[in-house]
Length: 485
Image (cartoon, rainbow, N blue to C red):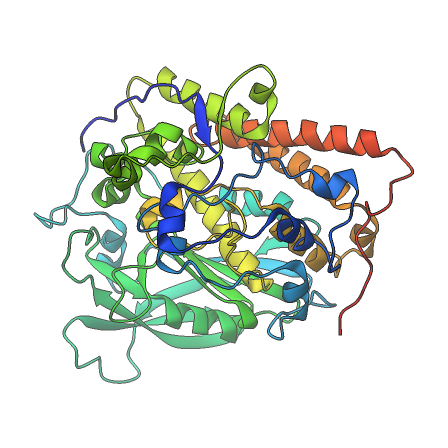
């Protein structure tokens, strides 16, 4: 792997959509629509709280060439009201009050080569890449991230061990590229077939074999405990869904309350193979929040510059006031950390790897809650068309999706419905910052200081809003208690 290059400090951010968005046919909803989407009302409240949606906190989706919304600019938006009315949505009700995590084993007792399938290879030479060996992040750390994210739901490991062995009940697949294996657990006693294929050749074929995620999710459905709201399966192996897939990082069968996430494509070697950090794709440092660097956005939308008709979106240069906002706290922490690293170590890579997996795990679990892909803001719930776009998206929830999470969790704690959105989000931000601070204190920092910076800025914003409204609350500061049929 070539050495990573440091990037200059980014002091100007692109806060509106890129010039490519209009070319792709994306029309961002008007400000009144953005505010209405967070409520059950047809008209936005005139209160100061619902009007405070600063772009220095919640930028617009970038929509760079090749991004998901660039390919599908008319993807239907899901407001809070549409979320509430979604027929497939599963409300949180007793006894379904737990989020289970299930980690697939990396070792098979009768298939010694199974473990080697988790090791990345050079797509050209097909030989293992051992340079900068980086241990996988601990799935228990991902679980610890999900605890404050989905509080007050209990996040707990699946109680029974899982084994993966050869499938012996019937003849193996007639396809030479498919291997049948067995997923088993003793409580409940279940065994299901799991297909494994040889990874199709291509530029991003950086693993020798891939597990079929549909089979994994079918298994999760079969063993879903009666007290589970949802279950998330963690996999170290690369995944695929169907024969046309190159790979798949995560998938949710939301209506069935099951999802799966693989860490394989966030391995630093796999990211290098995908081109993340390559100079032709903007260089290192343009994962979130560096993805909002104005210079980077312009480089990715070169065609506009070549026409001589530069379109200027909303940009902001950092100053004393802007420097305290969430996005500028994030970018300051991001660029300062990159500048402090002369050589990326295995510890740096593992830290960044963990942050990527945590974000995707929360994304897939939110699909189990009924939350659809976001088209309103740059948001953790945006759809992704590539691993490169994935790394450019934030960890936080936009106001619309934060309102959905608040509404969903009211099923566990009715008291959540009695607090304002600002009070709810403040508690969420404080919990998440507590987790980030703990990770950073342990010496794991790359990818986390920028998250902690954003959270610190947002906490200060929310405290100011709540203080301005006063203890008595103002008109429109509490959620509309309408229950939709």
